[in-house]
Length: 120
Image 1 (cartoon, rainbow, N blue to C red):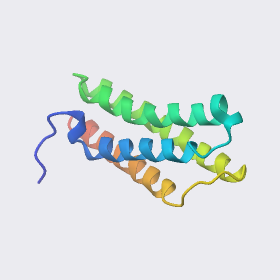
Image 2 (cartoon, rainbow, N blue to C red):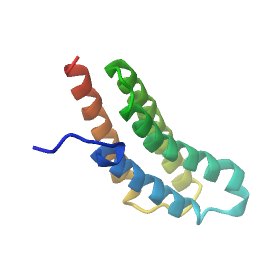
Image 3 (tube, rainbow, N blue to C red):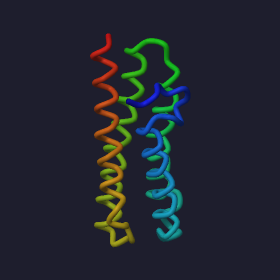
């Protein structure tokens, strides 16, 4: 049994989301310069939103608020899922391990949200 998280950094879901953010920064660093204010910026913002909403939701007092922030993070997961598809379809270099990491974040977010809702 894991010890209860003291900070958002203790959450496995946040750790995986943060790893995904780092991966997105590395991926988008190889995108063409003309994408800097387009796909690169949007992709990075959406990835950061996942980890940031997990962090913000962690300190919310009500379970309803927590779940709302995790739901926003889940929306950003789906946005990133689309950006991975678009990047690949545009012929940009996207490592194969980006999608499984995003899937793992999505599953962990869902499980974490369900566990909070069950405790209500």
